[in-house]
Amino acid sequence: MKRLLIFCSACLWCVQVLSQSVSVVVVGDIMLEGGPMRAMQRGQDPFASFAPLFKSADVRVGNLECVVATVGSVEPDKPNTFRVPPSTLKYVRKHFDAVGLANNHSGDFGPKAFTQMVGLLKREGLGYYGGGLNLSEAHTPWVVERKGVRIAFLGYNEFQPRNFEADHDRAGIAWSEDEQVVRDIATARTQWRADVVIPIMHWGWEEAKANPRQRALARRMIDAGADAVIGGHPHQVQDTDVYKGKPIFYSLGNFVFEGFTDKVNNIGWALRMEVSKTGVTSWQLHTAHIDGQGLPRNAKRVINSP
Image (cartoon, rainbow, N blue to C red; front, side, top):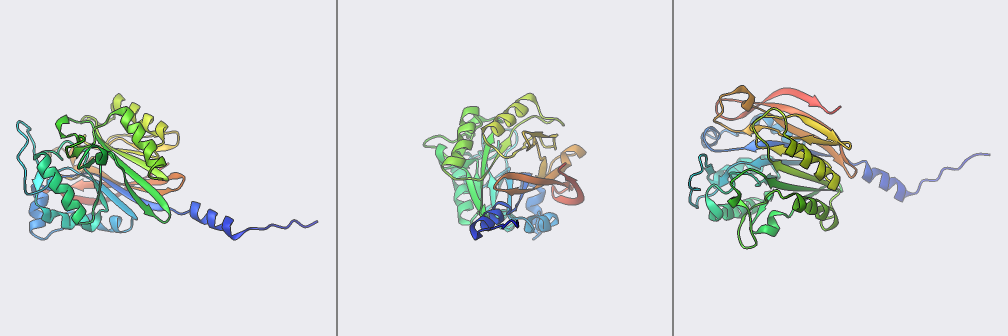
């Protein structure tokens, strides 16, 4: 007796949708003052070496480690403060879809400058996460849909000063509170209907390996429903991990950043992930060598997922 196999068009459509793959590129700290700013004033694109990688991706994000504004007052007693003019967004917009604001420099020139930056990002059509005009917006994910896959990005800072934090009536960044982070991840799925949730952290110390706090929180975020955890701030790359089949990148290091003399601080990673409705399916780490101007050079060295 012959078996009759019947496939309905709806089932074939479901298989096709579930197999759709979206490429996401994430880079670490982007600080545009100093050498990168001078390069842009000469008409040089600071991201040019990685342009092919960005162009090949469906979604591109990175941590904006400086204030983009023309107003505000410098944060008193803060040893390092960074601010660049709105003209720099020409190059950011060319290569990125959204930027992270949850870091310890977004508030360098106060809420007035931060508010102007948010307005400039909106004007340029750039998304942002990890910050906003009030507490609610700072904890709202940036959600992007590509090929039927909805991806939510959240951002949190753990590095002082905490007075950069958003409040109910104050613009600023999202501070990392464990219970709030867990709620935000759940809300990204229930309210924002995300298939994939990716929290991006600003955490850790300048060490080659992640500390116990980073490891514990990364696992808690994955237990809460995160599909990958990505970090930065230590100004060097850190180790990677896999927990419950989900990748953790504790620090991607610097990407565009002048001012470091040690080799370890001038090597960063550009992370490319393939994601589907089921989560991260594969990833690659592309090595960046940062030159004396603070600009990344593509080293053509790639580390692939196991």
